Length: 224
Ligand code: MMA
Ligand code: CA
Image (cartoon, rainbow, N blue to C red; front, side, top):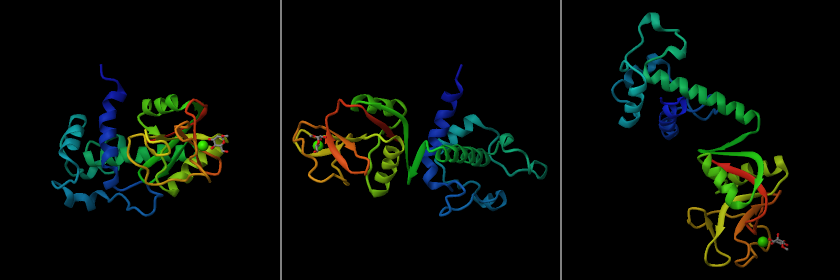
């Protein structure tokens, strides 16, 4: 039998993929509200969602989209069968979950990235493994705003953290875990200085970076 998570994961994954093109959470004020059903009538038949996405939802919800009948207005969202309402309901529920996680300081959202920490410590390989097992990777700040978000976890747990950066075969040259060259750095003064002996990178409690041996215990911060 299919588990709840195996049923929901494709739909949620498809939803997240298309999230950037859809209205965001209320409270993120730069983005528009979800249009009322009546305003959306003109969209029938020209949905911007991919065929694959509609196909996935089609297997979960039926009948195909139609306008609500007058007596259906005001039904709880949980009884919606129109894919547009199903999507709006899923978005609403995701927004509420994210709100709880932000409020409880479990996650930081920066643009499309979500940073999270479980407050635990591990060596570099184990930390990376934990992040990947959860569907993410090690936190890899690529601009000042992301660096500050990662720093806020370092301060929250008062622990240095490993970043998703490693030394390349060329000593002193560092790259992202996916082998791409760094586009943003925040080295502490005179760092990196390990010259091939410190192949990982830790973040200090002021947000600056130090190349460091990979076998130490450092805070696990992931990005998703
Ligand atoms: C330690 C170690 C290095 C760092 C220096 C800075 C002595 O080595 O943390 O990675 O560059 O301190 O003084
Ligand atoms: Ca160093």
